Image 1 (cartoon, protein in one colour):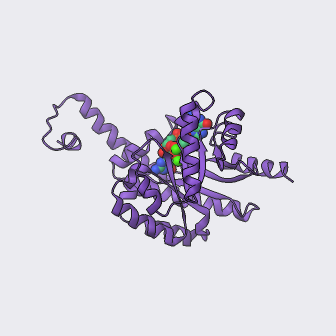
Image 2 (cartoon, protein in one colour):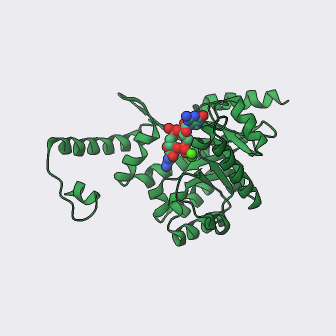
Image 3 (cartoon, protein in one colour):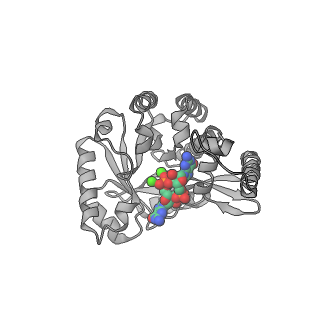
Length: 283
Ligand code: C2E
Ligand code: CA
Ligand code: CA
């Protein structure tokens, strides 16, 4: 019955053992995920964000991983959708936010005061009430300056314009930064760029992938950069895997980059090492 309801009203689903297995999987997953939070099996990996002009690391995107005791490392694509289905998006979101803010505060206090952290917000979390209050509490608890925290949302989350504008304005009042993630592949209303209090556009990596071969991608990126700069927004390109791509993006006046060319997402200890090496290089 629940499976049928999930797929919308007036649906008929026939019972079979796969469904039974799915229900068991879901229940196991829910229990395991709750335990994972308590047993410190969840980890945030960090991927550096680099300023193309200064070549300095200016921030890090926090990306969720689950060190599962028997299944090994599980990636967010296999965690977030289930967590949303189980109604655990807010619990997970809170864990991510608290950990990312704590970690950043620690790094700021240990010699990298201007570093920022970007945290992904799940669609369900964005739609529910409570996000703004949670962000406020975590900032107070960790004593992190609001401007050091960037929240990444996607275009599709802004489809309910009235809801989005209220949440974004409240977040903006707290002083946190907002980035539109995966920009260019979702529902796009250019109107919201004008009306929403946002600070960064993150160009989706599908445009960056083929930038050296596909003239259309070049034109799209170039248009996104001038549109963003015209509106006083910074542009960050994700999925940069080669030096050539980085140079090309620099020529297109992209502000920041992120991708395997610089570093894969890494554990906090490794990120700290990269930070120290990066800064030593510029001393
Ligand atoms: P995203 O926000 O678009 O994050 C970028 C994804 O691209 C990450 O995958 C990252 O590992 C990968 N990536 C980074 N650089 C490169 C590159 O140069 N080449 C390629 N091919 N890939 C690159 P990951 O960590 O598996 O995360 C997947 C998605 O899961 C994220 O996409 C984000 O939407 C979501 N996610 C991750 N962490 C969280 C979280 O804490 N909360 C929520 N709600 N969602 C999260
Ligand atoms: Ca992201
Ligand atoms: Ca993205």
